[in-house]
Amino acid sequence: MTHAPAPDFTSSGLTRVAPSEAGLPPCYDAVDVYACDRPLRAEVEVARTLADLERRHGARPTTVFTRIVDRPGTRVLGHPYPRAVLLAALGVDEHTRLSDMATRLAGPPHRVRPAPEPDGAPAGLEELKGLDDLPVLRHRPGDGGRYVTAGIGVTTRPDGSEPNLGFYCVQAVSTRRARVFMDPRTDAHRNLQAWHAQGRPMPVSVFLGANPVHAVVAASRLPAEGDDYQIASRLLRDDVTVTGAPPVPADATHVLTGRVLPVRETEGPFGEFKGYYVEEREGYVLDVTGVAARSGAPWPSIVAGAESGLTLMSFQNEYLMYAHLTGQGLPVRSVRYSVKARGEFVALIETDAPDLDLVREAMRFDVRAKLVLCGPDLRDVGQALATYGFVTHRAPYYRKGRIEGERLGLALVIPPTGRPVEY
Image (tube, rainbow, N blue to C red; front, side, top):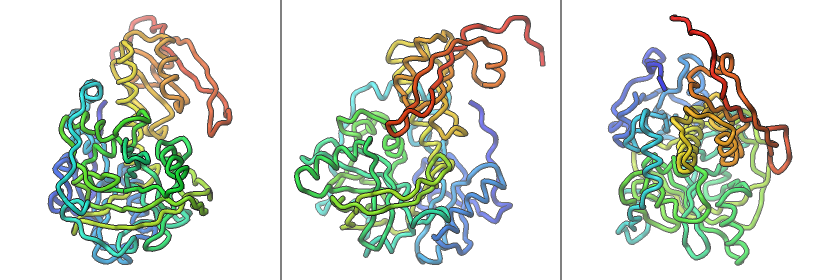
């Protein structure tokens, strides 16, 4: 996969800064990091500025916003998870990442170690009064409020076992009250039901700013059973140090703790990743019991449906699909999920032996993909469809339990005839 050179955003008034000066870990050396010193409000203006920069330059810069006028003294990190940062955090390159990550995923876990802090808070974090001390953004004008979007929620079973990581939108209501939506299909909702069945609120931790590998794990559809920190340790090839209950990584820069109550309130609307608003829906009340932050660390924020969120979506789909297919002994060279298809709905699988068995297995593994295309050369999908003959496999497409049309798989099994042109 080739990538165009990164645009220079200094012409738009941004200033290049060293990641260390911006309070970011070394993996951010893989990209240009910018600072925006213009006074902006957390209420829509920060997210709108990033969108305007993307429209102007064709890409979204990783930017630290340093003057949040309605949350003075705080900073926001926009576009926190570009692809190059994820690769650097994993210590892999673009060409070998799929095979490297599949090998690590199949290997033994490293240790998940508790940190020595007796109070359960990561070292160096300062206790704040509440959510109002954080620059939680309202991302789009139609959003129902301010949302924590880059926070990784940690839940466990009622006995404290099997820590599960996931992205769950948290709508800030007041300084100590929020609403969280947990889709019934998620592992967090399964844990929530188990806690509430015992008549107890579910403890939850939400962390931000830790090693981006945790974001890769949180975005991934992994088996419901087990410890997600062990998955992170496999991908990192190193021990993972955690603290608190539910446990968070010891290098987190922001941590929220709370209890998910068996009480529902209306949450939303919210601009989701498909580019459409999810209208008002029922979420659970989150009683916020603690808010802590590392001084000077920027608050990461993802605009749903924009580059960071979609990069996480495609990145996790690619490595999981590759690991599954090669684990089944299928001869796959690469897997790519189109960011233009929201990182999820179009899967491109390159193989020297395309056939319907491979297509069926891919569609069985990923039931969300609407189109699975399998062929020997998919660098230019239009060219591949124009020159190869193909066979198809169809299956119903389900959305929230209802059939909405079909899913389609194509195996490009009939190669082009004739002699290709020189240029």
